[in-house]
Image 1 (cartoon, rainbow, N blue to C red):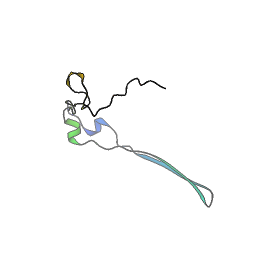
Image 2: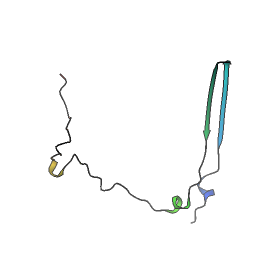
Image 3: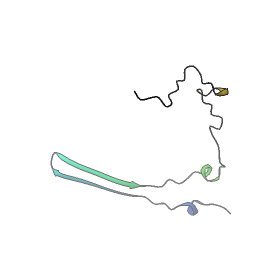
Image 4: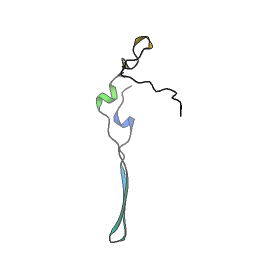
Length: 79
């Protein structure tokens, strides 16, 4: 089946804001808004991608021996 933008979401947006000045030198402002961005064609139909699947920790050398510049701070006694 084909997928259209209309099937995915509706175009909604809204905003509400206020200003309140109890005295001339004091002003309170607030706002809330909501919006929607239509996804691009590549976001709709692109396959899943993985990244950082070969991340290497420089402090965890092979064999469990850490590099000399990587300090280990595990279960330090409180004195």
